[in-house]
Image 1 (cartoon, one colour):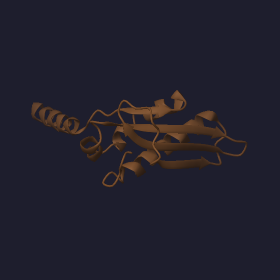
Image 2: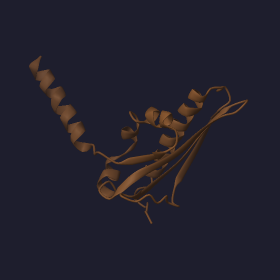
Image 3: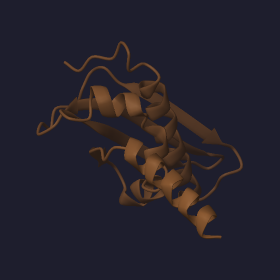
Image 4: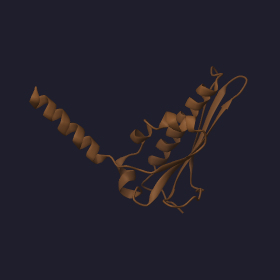
Length: 132
């Protein structure tokens, strides 16, 4: 039993060693940010940690809309130099809709999903991504 526990502990330590602590800033409702907090780490690859993490931060802007016949989640994601408040022109965007949604909580969930989708899009382009 100890052998299996030791193996599991070493595997967990190796997984944690490859992760980085990154900085991210949001513009929008904190209810949407809280829906993303436990998920965003899985969307930030090691390549970001190596190339951008030291001098940059992830910026996520999001909005949730509850309309009479649907909900909409919208997000804009970019990178900026740490210590600045500049919003970048180079961004990735995502919009997610649900015609069965009628609540603000549902719209907030769509905005969180849109944020992670836009982040995935940006992270897929790290080889060529530039911050101006």
